[in-house]
Amino acid sequence: MADSLTPKQIVAELDKHIVGQDAAKKAVAVAIRNRWRRQQLPEDLRKAVTPKNIILIGPTGVGKTEIARRLAELVGAPFIKIEATKFTEVGYVGRDVDSMIRDLMEAAISLVKQNQRERLWSKATDRVNEKLLDLLVPAKKLAPWEPDAETEENEKRGRTREKFRIRLLAGELEDVVVELTVEQKTTPVQIFSNMGMENMDVNLQNMFDNIMPKNAQPRQVPIKEARKVLLEQETEALIDRSLVAEEAIDLVQNHGIIFLDEIDKVCGPESGGGRGPDVSRQGVQRDLLPVVEGTTINTKYGPVKTDYILFIAAGAFHVSKPSDLMPELQGRFPIRVELTDLTRDDFLRILTEPKHSLTKQYSALLKTEGVEMTFTPDGVGAIADVAFELNRTSQNIGARRLHTILEKVAEEYSFEGPDLADKTVTIDAGTVQAKIGPIARNEDLSKYIL
Image: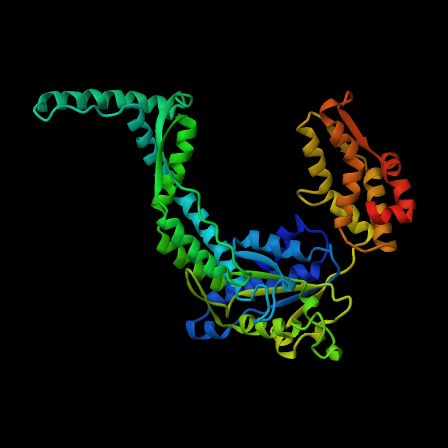
């Protein structure tokens, strides 16, 4: 875990991928640092310190989701993003709020397994090499009344095995074909049921999978393919599943992050009286309250306490406002950060500054076809101008507008890429205006294309 990063270091890492929104970056950086601080406290005081959940307020495309996602990657924490609109009140058809904790547990299990695979890779590789040598130099069956012949045969096999070991480790036998027996289960039984019963589905699926017999099928495969199959089998065999579950539960309880998007869609003025199509919105808030406040959720890996999970909620709040949330739920999100709309300069920076900026991505994609695509400063400026103007005059979709514009600018080159006579493409202001100008000026057309 990278919880020991200071707030300044966290913000510096986020700056490599996300432009602006300094207030939001500082808020999440402090929240992560407070987790490390909590771990340093005496146990009795540590139990009393809970995470300060955050609400990010801002229109779509300004970086709310990206901040949470990059933060989780940075600290190596289990993370899920889920829309609050997916949930329904208990008693209605749909997902219950407890399912997000089960989803977070699955994310943690995958994370812990991956970490264990990396730790066990060396040991698993040694075991795989031994199995490959068994396939290359199989033991001969001798009669039990020939002990001398058996001893001589074992010595001969040992010398041959060492010769093959040297060649195997040198990579000289990758294309040699061996016969490998691969265990395969029969076609799994698919379980279909109503939403909200995910846990029962998983248990039934596991039960049927265990009942189904395994088929051992011999296959002729080269060493390089056999190594992949055996490495996966040996790694899975070495993983301690009880330890995985225990470690994953601890990871979720103390380091888990849940990004609850579209929280504004489940709140609204009380004037509706709890009637109409949004009848279950208030119920979703009531169901969310104990999970955010701290409760115990049963999962197939064991009970999970939610007291110290960090919840980051986000919403545009165009129609409603944070104060429309239930007072009890508002109190569970003490930190509120308003993200600013993106300016023309922000678009310019988004196109050039991040480690994996959009212009770098498009250039790298076409480079696989041998095409050198370069963006001139005035070309980047023209893209930023169009994005800012379209967001101002039509629906504001933030940085996502850049994806639409760049896709339109690069469309012809992407299509013709393998067949282009001139393998050098320059995107300047003239190119951008030629591709986008007529569409941007036609308001009726721009609604559908841009």
